[in-house]
Length: 268
Image (cartoon, rainbow, N blue to C red; front, side, top):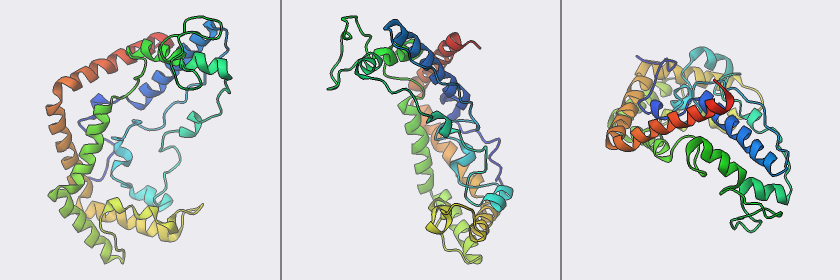
């Protein structure tokens, strides 16, 4: 009965940027944006690259997709993420520059009212989308698109939602719920995320939270929730991938283009 998600790779993963690729892609855009801003006489700092802590920065991240699955971590942290197991978003939100009106116009290519700015205040032509648009286009070929494409996110989220309505998953969820009731816990299915209850959102993990988390993982193991759920999830993804084969082939080419472009800016 599958419980370890460490080696689980869903079919949609090859069409998604890895965490490291996302970090390098946005770092490259920052470098190109700063270079463009310098052309217009504006200093624009480039933030330091924040390396990822987990496998992928996308909705298909299997380490967290099906809830808690690690008995050891559940016994220590309950439903809370263990240190170093989630992307370092705090680093990405570090205070950035505080641009003035002229800098914003060059950065975004827009006037204050949101209309397109053809030139800056000195009459110099501003690229479509400003310096951010120029940098984005240099990486992806499109001044408004960078990173994962919408279709891939639609498939990723769609398979997750569809799997939960599948009779096979409903049955295994019901078995999990019955298992939890044996220990005195009334949860309809694992997606109800008992860890989000008000009693479990305090500053520190409690014995009560750990007790529920441990039983949650145990019941997932006993009823093979992860094995069934991930298999059904993957089946829906394969169907969607087959139905969108041509578009997804273009997505793969697009990933190669963006990664190669980022490597050209940052060096491999």
